[in-house]
Image (cartoon, rainbow, N blue to C red; front, top):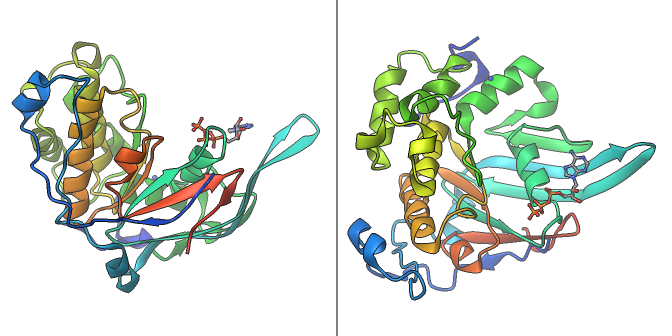
Length: 287
Ligand SMILES: Nc1ncnc2c1ncn2[C@@H]1O[C@H](COP(=O)(O)OP(=O)(O)OP(=O)(O)O)[C@@H](O)[C@H]1O
C-alpha cells in the first residue's frame, strides 16, 4: 500500500512533555460495536480499545526515523517584540510509531505540529521528513512533500461546506497526487473504510461531528501519506464518538502509518506508544 517517496517520484505540479512508556501495551479489551457505542450511556462510557497491533515503544528503536526535529526554535514577531515560543526542540519519531503530544494550553504543541507538517518554518534548526531536510528544499518541493507525505486532521474538521463528503476527500489531489492512482475511486474506498459509504454525497452540514471527522480522516489519507498529524482530533467530539475516531487511528497505526496526535486527554494519550510532554516551549521528556 505504501509508496516509496522522493521528491522526484511525484507526478503533481505540494509543555510538559514527559515521555511515558505505555504501561500495559498488551492491554486487550473488547472494542465496543458501533451499535453499542450509540446506545451506551455517555456518563458511564469508557473507551476500551485493544492495542495488540501496536508496536511496543522499544520496537521503534529499530525502525527508521520519519520525523527528525533538531535544535528547533520558533519565535513570533509581535510589533517590535520577538516572542520565543519553542526553545531548542529535539524530537525523533520513528516509522510506525504512534506519538501523543500533551501539555498545557499555550505551551507550543500546535506550533510544533505546524512546523513538523511544514505549515510553518522554524526560526532556527532543522526539520527532516523521511530523510529530506526542509531547509534544503524549495517552496514547491516543500509543498509536494507536505501534500504527499503528511495528512492533517484538525479539531474543527476544516471541511468545505459546499462540497460533498466525496469532493472534500478528493480535494487535496487537485494540488498533489501520485501517478497511477484513480483518486475518485480511492476517495470512495477511503469513505467506505471509515464507515461512510452511505454518506458520500452528503455535505458537511448534513453530517454529525463524528462523521465529519471521519471525512477529514479520509481526506488526510487520500495521498497515502506516511505521516498523519492530528491536532486534538477528538476535542470537539463526545467521548463515545472520540473513541470511534481513536479506534480508526489505532487501526491505521496497526497498518504501519506513523501518527502524531496532540491531545489534552490522558486517557486518549494512553493509547499511543509514547507520550511527549511540552511545557513552556520545551520538551520535558523526549529521547
Ligand atoms: N501566529 C502567531 N503569532 C503570534 N503568536 C502565536 C501565533 N501562533 C501561536 N502563537 C502563540 O504561541 C503560543 C503557543 O501556541 P500554540 O497554539 O502552539 O499552543 P498550544 O500548546 O497548541 O495551545 P492549546 O492547547 O491551547 O491549543 C501561544 O502563546 C500563542 O498565543
